[in-house]
Length: 431
Image 1 (cartoon, rainbow, N blue to C red):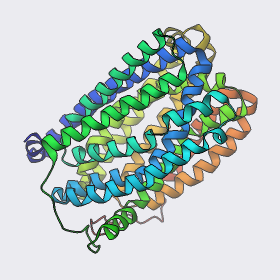
Image 2 (image 1 turned 135 degrees about the vertical axis):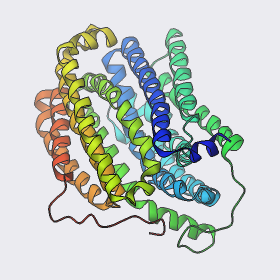
Image 3 (image 1 turned 90 degrees about the vertical axis):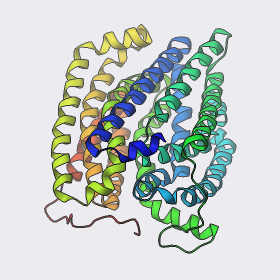
Image 4 (image 1 turned 60 degrees about the vertical axis):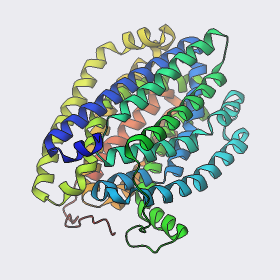
């Protein structure tokens, strides 16, 4: 079996192969997401792109509430004990249906209240099923990552986005609007989930197990309770991070116009593209962190190598984009988006701090200090709200990008090790 061969290979070679595999997935996915964004921007203008981005800005944080950090916990724990997969998945499915189903219904019913813009209010119910679909897909990808068999991930991600781009183009050619584009997003994501389930059944499904989760009593409700309790720090981390990521888009739509939100969304696509290689590295490294964290010297050595590389990568991207920002926006979205050039420049410098913050966050995760990173994120989220409310009314999308840059820099400073902070704690699966 592919997954078995992957697990048995040496760590450095496995990490390299998995990084390349995830990089292919990330680069291909980012490229197709970029094409999709440009397609919507060119077909519907900055207002249409702003409506599309704002509708999804409400959906994605709720999908992370439904996710509840379970995917991260499963990746870490099943990397240690793959035989526990059936009981983790049973408990996770029950939790997904309960949380995700409730939030999907709530968002669909509350759509008229989430935005005064009529198109956004109509678009949110079309995108609401993603609140349930995305967490279910993450269950299967978590199993793939835990087994350190990354090969299905590029096929699933790139295949879904290729279908979404093709169908969205066909819809626009037939005279469809932004609501049709949101419906295509939901349908193709559902197809991706079905494909992931088939891959899991074909190559990864294990024999049923009746063993309870570590440290918890038998019985379905106790299984779910144990899973949610242990996943809680990651759930909070994901929700805070998603709010911080989407906050500026929501405030822009509230405080300015959908056009300013469209400018910000266009610039944000370039920043997202800049994350693909570092994210591939992080994704390949995480399943090995349980073993790596037991060797303090190896852990310190790894992060001493990673941080300078991340800094060099982020600075190089920002320096390359600075003189080309207007040209890139014009070529990608059209001349109507050229005023977003300053937004793009600021966003790329913000990416430098975001990458360093991501590396430092993984360091604290390896130390079992999720609560500390959550405290930092909560503090910087409050800072971002204050800065955004100050900058956005006067400067629009430029102010939103500046608020994001200052927030990422502050988070990095807070995450840097305080002299008084102990690093002796080590994670064990029974915690």
